[in-house]
Length: 120
Image (cartoon, rainbow, N blue to C red; front, side, top):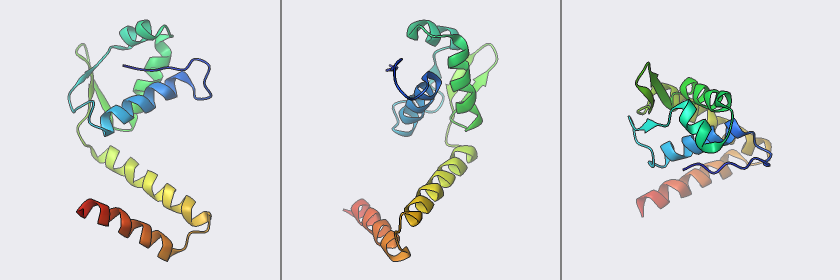
């Protein structure tokens, strides 16, 4: 399920975190799906359990997953936390485009294109 590059620039916990986020956002993982336990995933990947724990803690902090004591780790439903994170990420991206020299009109035009594609 996970592809970990032990020699990559991105840390292992970040790779786990970003892959789980992508699985959730794309619908591969659905709300209330159970994730492997920290110990199980660490054994499967041949890594330290603390690395998996760090990824899970960050995912939980950002509203992607939740933990039930003695039951496991599960995918959260669409939450306020995830909505707020998505909003912050979008604002960050728009500010970066503005800093790159995009005008308000150019950004508006790009948004219009995105919404036109949805209507097709």
